Amino acid sequence: METIFSIEFTAYVALAVLLYAVREATNIPNRYIPIVAVVLGVAFSVLESGAFSFSVLVNGLRYALYGIGSVAAIKYALEKGDDKQ
Image (cartoon, rainbow, N blue to C red; front, side):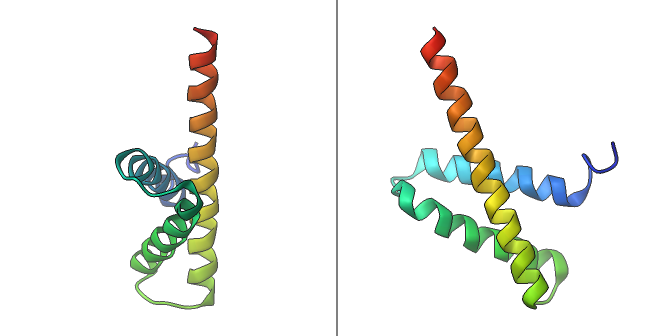
């Protein structure tokens, strides 16, 4: 249960919510959402660690990939929910 409430999990959820909000609120084409996710993920990772290194970059890319996957899962779930009604 501790891993669910860890800072890393919170970062994934926060990035996913932020990406979903950016996707819905702006007219950014879907092909640019991964670039936005990478920028936000790396920026959050740098803010979290206070420095920039290769491991911080990899951690930011991991945040971005999980955020993109979460947004895709939310989008898929919402579309499937609309199809059933």
